[in-house]
Amino acid sequence: MRYLFALTLLLTLGLLSPACAQPGRKSPAFKNKVKSEQNKFLDKQWWLGFKAGANLTQAGVEKRYAILTPTNYATSVTDKAYDNFKKVGSQAALEVTFNYKRFALSAQPTYRHSRFTYSNQFEWLNTEQPAERLVLRYDQEQRIDFADLPLVIKYEFGRDKLRPYLQAGLFYSILVNATKTVNVSGTDYASGGTNTFENEPVIVGARDLFDNNWGLIGGAGINYKLGNVRLLLDVSYRLGMSNTANVQNRFGNDRLSGIGDVQDDLRLRNLLFSAGCLFPMRFLSSSFKSL
Image 1: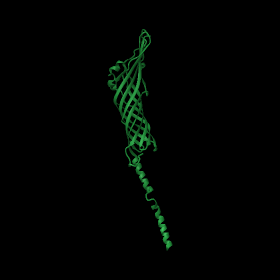
Image 2 (image 1 turned 30 degrees about the vertical axis):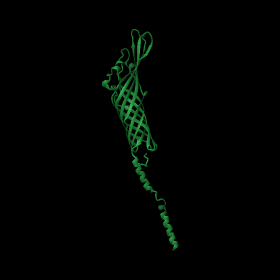
Image 3 (image 1 turned 45 degrees about the vertical axis):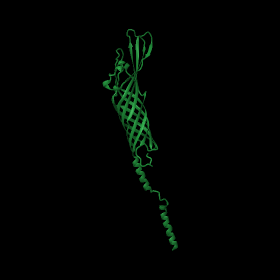
């Protein structure tokens, strides 16, 4: 009888020992449920941040205009030659992004300062004395400030710390300010020798010569997860779809018209390089680190 009692006691303790050995451990089913709830939460996230960088500009000519028209050689000789993607501008943006799984909708209000240059040349010739001539060269630099309102859709690849993405969208640019600098230089062959000269630069406010415009955005970038923060690098191309020139004020600046300069019809194209960081707006708890 004693042996039977002892055997029963041992069996009872053996059955109870797994439950009593680790009273604080949760069951695998409970863990999976918690993990699933966290993943559902992280599928939706708001991000707020700042980015800044540099940009290059190309001026796409839609239609050319001129003050001076040659009479003894082709008009195309005096056409403006644009230096595309040569002058470096800058931009700064506030980014507000809503993430859902791999997709994101992003508003990125931006202050953008863009620059581009062009040049053209005129020649005056004494038909009776061909050696007597005057060559003038005009070098112009445009500086334009815009308040851009872009709306972008992103698609992310991967779930690691380093996440590449593609982006596409639309933008509307509101003109803030513009200035133009004109450098006039030349060579005089008609004053008894060969004399070169360069006049003082003409700097004028050119806000009336430009207008608001809109366009398309395409690009790519990389997010890097650093704790709760995302560091980002991106490149975007903005294709202007409307005329940037103000057609009503084309000949309205007397100083520019007086030196033979007039604004062409242009569609601006910009290549933007940016770096920044984003901060998450939603957390599970004070002890949980958001992805």
